[in-house]
Image 1 (cartoon, rainbow over the protein chains, first blue to last red):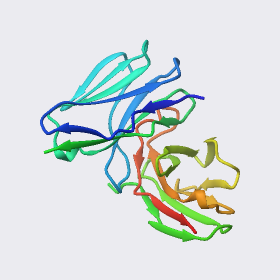
Image 2: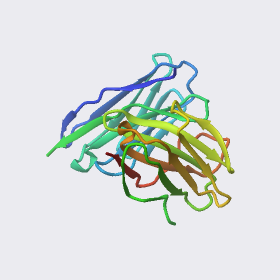
Image 3: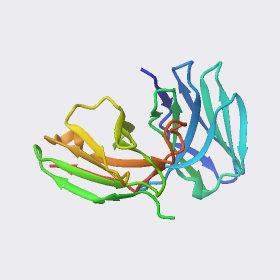
Image 4: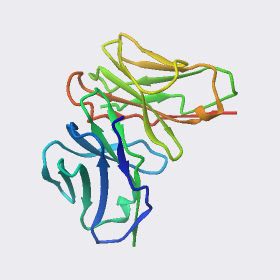
Length: 110
Length: 115
């Protein structure tokens, strides 16, 4: 059973600080990972994806992948109140479907 | 460009009844995924349809079924409803099959309540 695990939180971060969201997975054969953001009562929306080891930056967001240690992280710089949401980590393990973690609830404190 | 649409937005049923949920993908998208999001359990993969065929299914009983129509819209049917089927059902679409299914575009969901 391929699994993706996240700390459910809540994670509280002061406005302007860096929010760090982490995700671990159990399958060494994993291929790629995706971070989705879900506002309360809304559907998930894709923020970033990462396929290769290392960092990938997009604006205030940085995704990090370490396949040897089997973890993925999402860093949000200069956190804003609008970043308050649940962040879902998902892995694609080559079995034609995404496996989602349960999500981490992030609250940015003004 | 219109996004993924789902209907109805809310559905209330009683135990033992059947529920039918509908999804229309983004124009040009051929793959449709269905997920169940129950409170505290995250997104659980239900079904994947592409080009009219069921390509994969999650760990759900056979009373969860569906189909994809020639226009790529899809229907999810849940028979013999149980209380624990109460959840948000999300549909997502992707542009093509064969590639990574990670870049999914989600609809607003159907909230199903079973009494």
